[in-house]
Length: 279
Ligand SMILES: Cc1cc2nc3c(=O)[nH]c(=O)nc-3n(C[C@H](O)[C@H](O)[C@H](O)COP(=O)(O)OP(=O)(O)OC[C@H]3O[C@@H](n4cnc5c(N)ncnc54)[C@H](O)[C@@H]3O)c2cc1C
Image 1 (cartoon, rainbow, N blue to C red):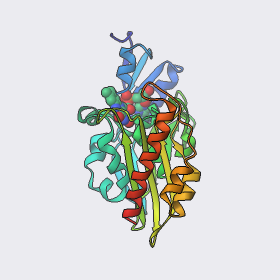
Image 2: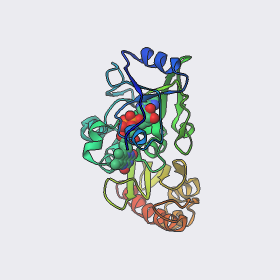
Image 3: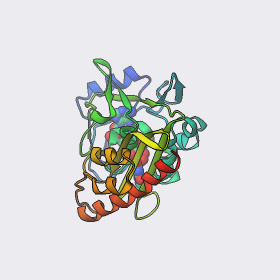
Image 4: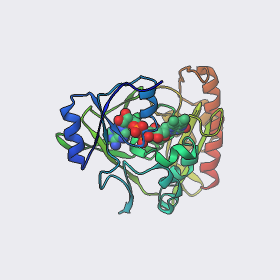
């Protein structure tokens, strides 16, 4: 299929992008990497009257590590994150997740801002950002605001972004010597969206784990933290954590809820092992 007709504008700046979005009263869409948007246009799941291309907007990309914080500009491409030595050193969870995000051709164009704004419940980066206790900068007509990752994802493909907002950057704490991370997912083919996946962060204290944050994806409408399992893992028992797994996965085209629940337990064992081996 081909998309319905639309107009195209190349934004010259962030302000220009926000102005164009405002002028079109919810009928305009931002174009980042286009890897999800163009597919939805072609399938006519979306028919904006205008695409606002933010690929040429200065200052929206790049990785900055300062004062114990990693900041990533929205237009930073997946491929840049995948090959960045700063990400490998200061954001090892993102480094572990990147090879699972789609395929190389899609990673060449897709952006972190596009992935978070699109908010596919089976996507890796939203769950990573929640596990990392990150925050997201949003710029709109009323200025800039910062939203905690845990509050950003609101429903199925629904976020805290308004129709005239631009996600400009994300931030999260840089890894320290105590930081431990784990990541695993099950997909039918490598590069497909996950059936179930798990992103995890913890702090090592001797042989024990503190501040465990386990965030599943592909199990419902949003990235889901499992706080009872987190507590059980912090007590040191993987079996107890699996038994405490407070998830209620919804069935989807990939698997039933019961299968997903089982797979979630399998992933928890793998990820817990990763966290504990490095602790
Ligand atoms: C075959 C295939 C397999 C894929 N597999 C995976 C996978 O396994 N895991 C995964 O995570 N992703 C997967 N993707 C999606 C891919 O990662 C996309 O690149 C990503 O979801 C969207 O990023 P984008 O930059 O291409 O955004 P676009 O497609 O350009 O935009 C997506 C949406 O976000 C909005 N948007 C984009 N940028 C911003 C911004 N800065 N502020 C506000 N709104 C914005 C757009 O208006 C649009 O509504 C797959 C895609 C394809 C085609």
